[in-house]
Image (cartoon, rainbow, N blue to C red; front, side, top):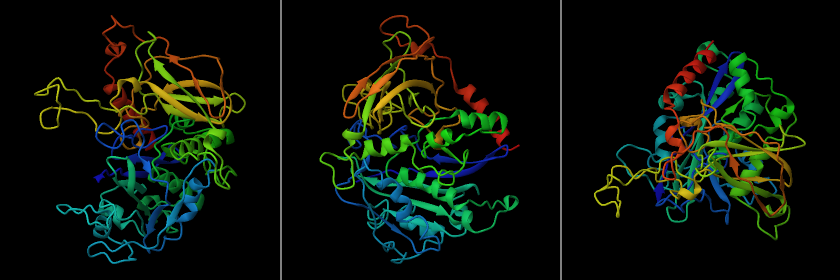
Length: 471
């Protein structure tokens, strides 16, 4: 059993007068779809890590004062998707782990680390999350645990995947912890005590539970965020709000979805949870077969030469009738690793091992070059246009979208009025060739070699963003 902690910290920040929630993660994610993708020796290469849905996904909740808030009600948003074969069950209180008692309340940093199975110098207890024994949902009533972890006061929660089967790629255990300081009835920013409405709280943690289930981030209607940063006004219309995925890295730019009378899951959210957990045919009562409700647009994003695949470009399919509301997305190369490594410096390049090579790359994500630049977008039947854009420069580190961290600006542009028809149960192939990218010198040289060095650009822009967010 292999363990992988994916800390997902949700931070509350301001951009001028705009309150927003920024999700941070400790490691790179594969997004616009799955959170983590199997690699050469971790799970099945190129296949997203998901729960085994032949049985209900079970979780346990501590007995703290917030324990009634996010239990089945928030998970139910995901399991209620008619095309998602997903059942979740609250198995009761937490199991005993070491000195932590059965059915206990996680109150201290020691309690949290014990239940998580993250005590330094100790092998994880079999009952802990890292030991694969339970999937805990924990509640920090007053923020004490978050303070003990050294997290900023804006962090309102995080989720983490603990253990998975390295052969099948099935998640065995995961967890989440919620910060009760945001529900204590006190709103005093000068004392670093912020408050959320019930709808905001629900939306934030429904997002977290999306990560718990294996979903990564998605970027749609990012111009709302750009408006907030540049002008202090997001100008979020009802259609913008409806189309912005719940799994968008920043929450709070728009009115909470349920407050606005909108479904909490956008088209993109429902499409991707269904693709990860598709209902097969014939469907059970109350469900709909995935292939009866969704088709796919798939292809490859290329540089202008039409040969070199382009990695890390956000691809959005928008319905021609309601383009801001009905849209789904994915990042090109979403199944490919963010770091393929290299074997040139191996003692024996023909037999690369971790002991004899300097860099074997990220163990997660496929290393198959055929998947570079590849994209697939699940969509309800209809007519769509395709849009490409850069992943927002601020979506790096914990708020990554796609496997490249930091993200790169899209190496070219794409503008086409061509429409693509989607039919249920079928895949429509549509390749995208970017315009205005640098040429290749020859068949052995990638156009990407001529791309400028990008790090100073995103570092400077990140500083500008921080300055604007604090003014």
